[in-house]
Structures are given as C-alpha cells and as structure tokens.
Image (cartoon, rainbow, N blue to C red; front, side, top):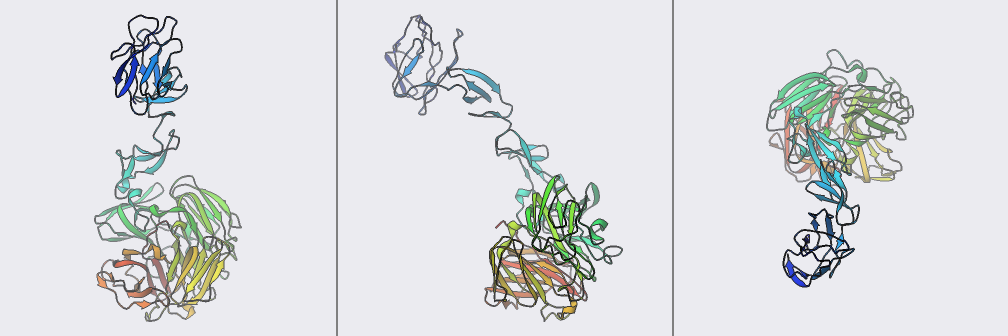
Length: 621
C-alpha cells in the first residue's frame, strides 16, 4: 500500500469514530463520516491533527500531512486491510496490521533531501543533499562504486560514498576523454578498451646495464614502434617533463627511434640505485606494439625486449636473470619502473638472490622497500656470488620489470659474454604449461642452437615434469627455486601443478653451437597463444627468424605465405617450424593462424644475437 493520508473533519466534536466504509486505492477504511476525504480531528483532551487524502499500496500505508492549525507533521508506516480508526489521547490506528510511525532517527529520502524521523509522525531534521541521498544513510557525496567525470579524469566513488579517488586519467595525448554518460575514460586507448596483451598505447622504454664498450658513441639504443591499428598513430615521446620527440607512424608502418643513453642506468657495475625520471615514455593515440633494442644494429653485445604496455602491468613479478660474472665482475640486474607517484616497491629475494650491491633502500641481502615516483627507475645489481633469478617483486601500484645481465657468458665457462634482457611477465599472466624449443644456428640454420633453460617456481612446493623426459623432474620446495637445463637442443613440454616462469638462454659462441652469442627469451605459456601477430625484425641483421609453435595440423601463414615443414615435438600434440624472414620492406611482419600459436623472433650473426617473444596475450589466469 502507498501512503495513507487523512484529513481533518470540521465537525468540531470531541471524539470521532469512523463507522462507514470508504475505499481508497484498493483499501477499505471504516469511518463514521461515511464519505471520502475522511477527516480526523483531535479530542477536547488533545491528540493529533492531520489533513490529507488517504492512499494505500500493497507494501504498507503511511501518511505525510501537515496541520493548517500548527499541528504535528505526521509520517506513518504500516499495512492495513479494513482499517478502523479512532482518535483521542495517544491516537491509535487498528486493523489487520498496525500502522506505525517511522521510528525515531530513521533517515528517509524525498526530493533530494534527507529527512530524519522523530518517531511521532514528523521529522526532526531535514538536509538538502548536494550529492545523492541514500535511505537509512542520508546525504552522500556520490553513489558507492560508481564512476564520475571530473575534468579529464574518471573518479571512482568510495565504498562509503564520501570520497572520490582517481580511477583513470583520461590522457588527451592518447586521444582519450572522459565520457560524462558513464563517468569513464573513452577512446581506442582507454585502459578499459584495451586487452591484456602486448598491444597498447602507453610504454616505458628503459635503458639497462650494457657492456661499456657498447653503450655510447655510435652504438644505438632504440625503441621500435609498429603500428597495428588501421589508422595513422600520433606518437609522443617524453622523459619526465622533457619533450623528446613527436611524429606519426602510418597505419601498418614501423618506426625505429634512437634514444639517448642514460649513463646512470647503463654504465658501470653498480651499486643498486634509483634514477629519477630514468625511463622514457612512449604514448600513442592508436594501439601499437613497441620493442626496445639494446643495441639496435647488429654488433658484439645485443639483446632486445618486447615491451609490455601499461594495460598489461600489475604489481607482482618473479625475476629471471643470470649469475654474477666473477671473472669480469659483471652483474645481473633487474629494473623496476613506476608510472604513478608514491609507488611502494617491496623486494623479496630468492635463495640465490640474497647477494646484491646495497643502495637506494635495498639491503645487501636483497630485501628492501623503495618508494618510486612516476618515470623513476630502481635498478638492483648483484654482488659476487649473487643470482637474482626467483626474486619476487611486489608493488602497491602497477610497475614494469625488466631483468637480465650486463654481459654474461652462457654457460659461465663458455666464451663470449653478451648483454641479456627481457621484460618480465606479471605473475597473474604466468601459467602451468609451456612448450620450449631451441632456435637455429648461424650460419648453418639447418642445425639447432644450444640453449640453457630455467624453470622458476612462483609458489612453494611446485611439482615440475618434462615431456619427453629431460631427467629433471623435481619438486621445487620454495617460491623462487628453479631447475636449470644446461646446453640442450631438445624441444619439450614443461608442466607444473602451480604457475611457473620459463626462461631460455642461447649458448655462447664458444659452446660449439654456431657463431652467435647469448640472448635471453621468456617462453610464452600455451594459454597465452594468439591467432594473429604483428611483429618486427630489424633488416640490419644477417638473418632473422620466427619460430612457430602450434597444435599439430594448424594452418598458419607468415606475410601471407603458408608455412610448411613443421616437426612434431615428441610425446606432445605440438609441432615447431623455424621460418627465415624476408628482408624486403620495413622489417614488419604479420602472422595469421587457424588456431592460437606461439612465436619467438630472433636475429643471429657472428658474435651477436637478439631474442624476443613475438607477442602474446597476458590474460590473468
């Protein structure tokens, strides 16, 4: 029933008893007046004065009326069917259910105002709400959990409705604006419109430790941007507040962008430190793919990273690196890059990661908490005997982690050393199954290149098995523990009962597997394979390849040409092919497949190599 409103009878009598029936909104009320518009007047001894018209609904009855003679405003709630009423001192209303006043202190909302019931049918207080009114609560700044626009920002309402926090900055440089209708950032590059993948609009190229003969002068560090969108992409590169460059990458095009070396990040062998505004930032108004090459052109110390866009960042990572080089004192490293001010980074070393060069809040045992602001870079370097592999990095805001080695031999007793690096995948995107295949050799690509493989546990008590058997099945007792396979050309499946990270390292030239030197790759989980890729391979290299891993029988094409010659991986449903890439065009390539496939891309030559994941999804598994 809806509100039951009662009006005054002007008969002037002391008591009024309602004896005749009046139907109001489907409710029958007994009244002595015998008519509609029933009036109630007080007894000579006092009582209640009301004016109004009676209404009722299925849920209850109430009155909200005021007296023209200065009587009490009445708020009544209840349900009734065949109500009979009488007035007198302490007026009572009796029926199938008892009508009651709104209890004292209860807050009701009406017309954007919060009203506090006084328990006697009226209101003791009334407040006009500037935001929203919530029954039982009162005036709030905003609706809990909803987003609203404030200028160029999408703001999220807190659980108590009393404050707003930044949900996303709507970046005009990325062509993103705040949509008033939904209170959220909108556009091709809005975070909510981008998937967890290697394609995005916001990247942070970061220079890392490199052999000091190769990090200056004519040696070039570069970002390479491939435009995967169907429209031209406007690119803006900054470093902190400094504008570096602006340009357009045409639809389907690729652009190599040399970036100045950052001495604090690339020279020397330590200590651990924070470099303020150390990272570059690349923003696009269309989704693109970005790689960083350290170095860009083929030389004696190279590697590369497939950079992850900020839409794929999280706050949890496990590190893959390589041991401190005792002979030349070259360290392994990891770098952490923040995109927001006041990002707190917590470091938890693995069993091998407890020997680092202290500095910037990082202790010699590898532990520490470090506060970073936007664009800052924390770089942690090993001390003698240290190996950062398995170290856990946690942050209270999303960060990027790149790990590797200044110049490492693989294995340590094999010449020659080479720079290693790769952007780490977030723990959320790690999985339990990977297919590991070796690359081909240079110059004879009919032979396989030897590799070392590390399988790293993200959780304690992780059981790892290999198919076909590699003689290394094991239970990894602690998070951060790892299994290492040395100098193998085997292709296999590695599976675990908990999430693992798998890193692959090319064996150096002195290891008997061809001319190239070490490079590092993170294997892509089978659950993160894709049906299509846009990837890049610099034409300056002697030879570039894409290795394709797929379920046997899957049709796949590279640059529009069907790929043949797949070799089955024993004991599995998977096969692999090594495809030599054409040097015609810009170095940009496409791959399409009938079902998801995994790819890695690499360049090889005498005393040089790079190795990157050609792309992947980064779904949270």
